[in-house]
Each structure stands twice: as structure tokens, then as C-alpha cells.
Image (cartoon, rainbow, N blue to C red; front, side, top):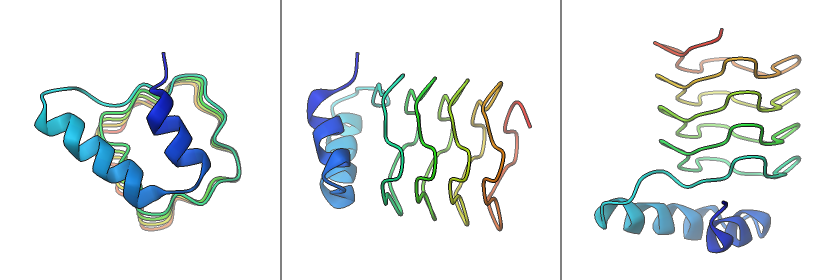
Length: 116
């Protein structure tokens, strides 16, 4: 189930507020935010902290994720078509069966990413 507050912040393109929420969650010993199957298509989410986030089946089509932190994110079957991932850190991310056609991965960190 998606975190209502997290989803609300992302839809408002409040990356700073979202990143603060994620930081607070980590400090309280909670894991990554659950955004499985959510529609985040076309949003500008530059430098968003999606580290350890659950984004399986999420619609990120055409989303601006430049310099996003996606380390160890779960992106199985996510729609990343035409997403801009320039400079994003996808180290250890699970991209199995993700749709990546047209995604821009220039200077993205892809070490140990699964499914590429």
C-alpha cells in the first residue's frame, strides 16, 4: 500500500518535502517507501530519493528522474519508457521486466542492477 503522504508530495512535485519524509522514515528505522503500481508518469522528480523504494509496476513513463537516487529500488515491471534517468544512481536496482524503451540512461550508474 502506498504511503498517502509520500504520494501526495510527489504529485505536487515537492521533491524536497518527499526527500525529508524519506529521511525521517529511515531515521525511525522504516524501510523504503511503497509506491508499487502508482502512476507517477510525466512528473519532474529530479534528485528524488527513491533509495530502497518499492516501485514495482509503477508508471514512470516520461518522468524526469535526472540525478535520482534509485539505489536498490524495486522497479520490476515498472514503465520507464521515455523517462529521463541521466545521472541517476540505479546501483543494485531490480529492473527485471521493466519497460525501458526510449529511456535516457546517459551517465546513469548501473552497477549490479538486475534485468538490464
